[in-house]
Image 1 (cartoon, rainbow, N blue to C red):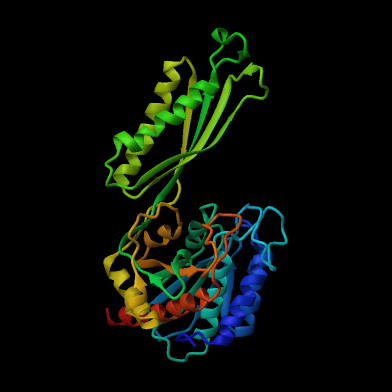
Image 2 (image 1 turned 180 degrees about the horizontal axis):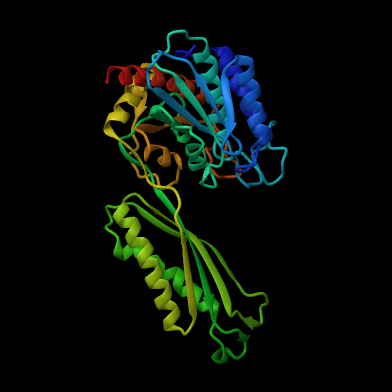
Length: 389
């Protein structure tokens, strides 16, 4: 037994996780996943409602008049062909739970079971099963649907194979980067590959642009400020003996400070248009704003750390020491109410720990017991703190 999570609950969490892993669903397509969640909540006699397209919000009663403490799990999968070889691998080619959301969902259902048994909850608890974290708009959809109504604080976390199972990682300040996306259209002049002087080569312009925008990080950003700009897609040309007149570049901008984020967007537009002008090509730059930076306040991190120490002991509570440039839409919740986002150590001993979003990603399922126990404990600690204020 780990605090509120006994072996029977862990067994049921593992069973749910493996079922969801075999039946992954993409953002806002999580129909079966939602049905599984609702079925489990029905058995526990926990009140819930389906909302936010494919999301589920469940409420557990607590001390009357106390503000609500919310706990959140994401439920969607990724468009990745699984190559883990697990006996419970995805049944759907090209779709995979490659980021641990199957584990997050199972954990929150374990929390529902553990807390539904308690008659003395310090505050009402709201369980938010959120769709579409991977594509970005899921948190906003749940907020619009009233997920944070009367909520005083919100907590969540992510499975992380960089840390050993049985550790909980609690950090103040920025723990996830903002995620903005760019789309650049280059309009040159196509022509015969043997007569380049009669064309404006969009491949050459695009190649120079890829290299030039890297100088935003290397020459326009303070080295002490974590920042990344990456081109993930470069499309141009159809045949080998023709010069491409059109090209498309797409990529992402990741920063951990608002001022750096604003500078990146302006610099990207400036450099892209300048490179195009240098070679006589037209350039159109579009920026799609993504998730905000995820920042834990000192006060909320203290509550989370107190709960973590009760679950794993002080020696097993860690901090992030390197910037995490991954995105996470939990930041939208923190713009509305106080809260904290942590990581659950989940490395598999003796095996290669492939990164999230890898086709070979997996995690130690025992980590779900520690994560669920922390969620139970932080709900109680936060509930008592809210009642005192």
